[in-house]
Length: 155
Image (cartoon, rainbow, N blue to C red; front, side, top):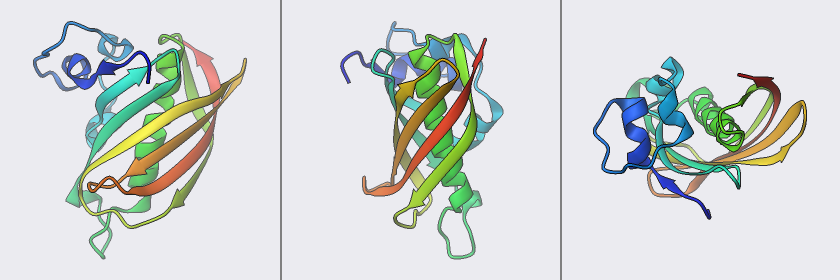
């Protein structure tokens, strides 16, 4: 990513922690949505010009199915909550996407713990954006991929 802002700049706006950086991101301007807080959303890096983002999530034991793996719906939510913010950042917070289609491929089971994601805007149209995301387990192995379409709205 060419223009990267690290997570420490973002943490105050979302998590209320102290920042080690004076760089502000678009996400500092808004409070964290409840879903992002539930999932443990944490910004690692964002490149608004490229429409890319890297995040971390806290896959809690409470998200697990009876086999002890994170239930797929939570992984889908993490991917959705990665791709949408990539779009939001690319439009400098002027547009948001409402997911109209989400397709997830689950490649391996995920245990509770820190997971990371990467998302990108594939194409930004006038009314619809096309998005892509990858989710990695705590060992850095690709565990799920997603594509999505989002209807664009103005803020």
